[in-house]
Image (cartoon, rainbow, N blue to C red; front, side, top):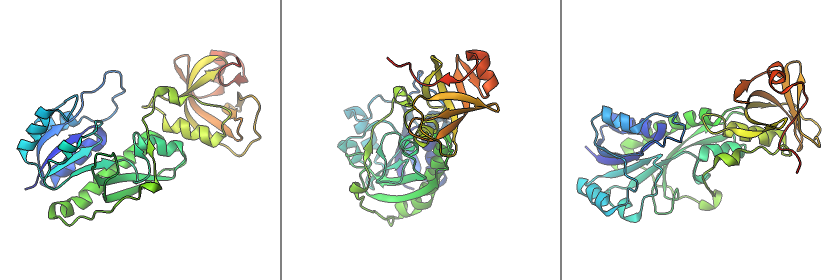
Length: 311
């Protein structure tokens, strides 16, 4: 029976840990993260899953300490797996497993290497993404590819919806290739790193809407950061607001000043870069609004100016 040490977090971590156990891998130790109380925890718990199976679990601030490296080395793992673990692993740790250290990444490598790949793919209007199992090197997301599975991104999919697809893609990828990994016959495909780039993490402040963008670009931002992520934000008639759900309408003439208008109870926004959006849900003054009548109750009759006031 092959032995593994697993570093994991989030839904991908839970599902891939379960794949290893279902395929007969001995998981000797799980490393995961303490949940951050300031973060919206909408995903499943790797720690709880490991406890359910009686697997020893640690939540170190740094997995690369000499003490922890020595503990993992003493376990003599065949494999080290990283499933949405958020800390970088150094060379000494990566060198321990006899048969390799592998990571599951939430994109079709070599595209969208780095942080929050699902959100970045949606922001850039991609129509496909997926999950890739690859060998780890000190340089992140750069090692040889073992297997990957693609999933579609539909035009109105939110990041949560795409992440759910990527989670399933990760589970399918690992389940499919794990027997070959154990047998030593899995492929190793060298990445052409010129075909993709690195992306950094995102902050809530990156969700600010620029109403001079085209409607499609604003729509992609809205769905990429929709709850449970922090959301795309703006001002409506001077009041702070979050735009939660949109739909791109037929081409419209660019407008000099973006405004939100009522049309048969629909909320329509013309965009400076061309096109128009139907605003299907927004949050203003702490309440969810889905119709022009609801918005009028809170902000008075429209049309309502969008964006921060001119300096």
